[in-house]
Amino acid sequence: MNVHVILLIAAAVGALAISFKKDSAKTWEGLKVARSRFGSIAGDILAVLALVSLFLTIVPPNVISSLLGSENVALSGLAGATIGTVTIMPAFVAFPLSASLIAKGAHLVAVAAFITTLTMVGFATAPIEREYFGTRFTIIRNVVSFLAALVIAGGMVVLYAIL
Image (cartoon, rainbow, N blue to C red; front, side, top):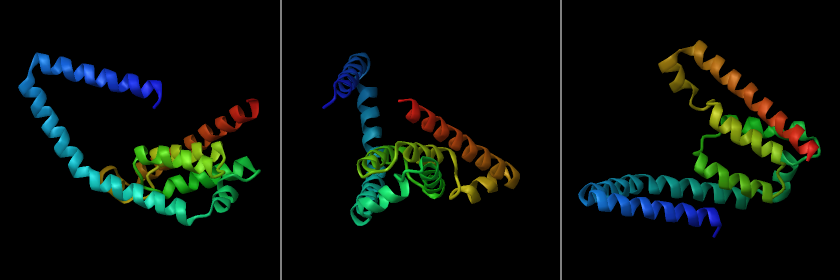
């Protein structure tokens, strides 16, 4: 376990102790609400983790390496950005997946482009966004977000070249 994780756990336990001391009834109520909410999303979290694990098991590392880890860093970054654009996945699943992709041979730039577009571009959710904000806004926001993600990935290329 990492030192930062231990410090974070200690801070959470300390804050919980202070909360109990201040008002134990409200603290218990808050813990019950948290347990209920976690219970309602636990199945979804496990399902997404199972799908990610299945994907990493089925897809051989050489395929990941050839698509996201090629010598052409710009092409790998574009592939990562494209995959992130059409993927729907919570960020708390994307980060461990990204670490696994890097371990299997994906380039850091491709993974940065993947995470950036995953969180900024909503291709799969565009119909819902279009319904609430209009077609013009949805298209402009997604195009600008995709271009910004490519700029961020390009910055990673520069950093990678320097380091």
